[in-house]
Length: 64
Image (cartoon, rainbow, N blue to C red; front, side, top):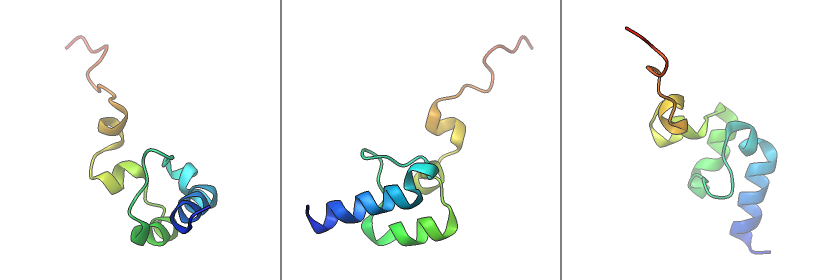
């Protein structure tokens, strides 16, 4: 395997999956260690809320 692929797989297996990253949503290589050290979820890294990331409509089901 290549060095970049190894780094990505190590990131995911060392906690990236737990922070909701996957093979299609990876941070920059230079950011990976800091993300794991600070437990930065994918939506925080991308600059959106968890609801925005997952497309959750907070008004769904409300009647007011």
